[in-house]
Image (cartoon, rainbow, N blue to C red; front, side, top):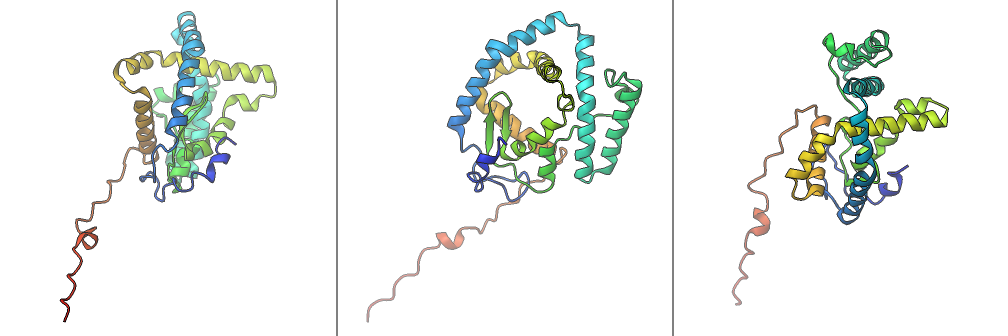
Length: 249
């Protein structure tokens, strides 16, 4: 729903090759910077103070259990995307992770699967679209949701639908779960935020470049193809001087 109004306008910015260079990296930079500033203000005034208080009150063991619980649902969605991408072995491992943590990890609160050697493989629908050949498209910053791209924005509703809050009919419980996930995730990033504030001269540009590079790496599973070599003869014909006009008789 968020991406639909932009699809017509971004047709010229979609890449023909997955992960390849787009027609323009950040065509909506002015608007994106305004949304980024709004998100930063929201974080500074609301999310960061709440997350800090939550981190000070809730023991690390409990916070890790919350991470594991939501991570168990993410593993199930990762399995679906691995199968959609044709990575059957990774999908089977994800299914085994979900089964192991659900049965032996108290419904996913304990990450037993990692202890027995079943590592996480995080896949989302935006990555699946990339594997299918859809280019990244223009960079977008959404209110609250943060950095994204045209491709990831199209996949975002599917990723949201795979969260545990969507399977609960009770409105209060659904909102409580969503708030818990948001605050717990933000609490885990408090240290990273301090480092980012210290090293980034232009925080917007830094976040944008890191986000796009990370998403590209995820689509290619860390094995990014080398850029095509430049043709040294390209443009020679255009740069060659025009033949001299014949002398008048």
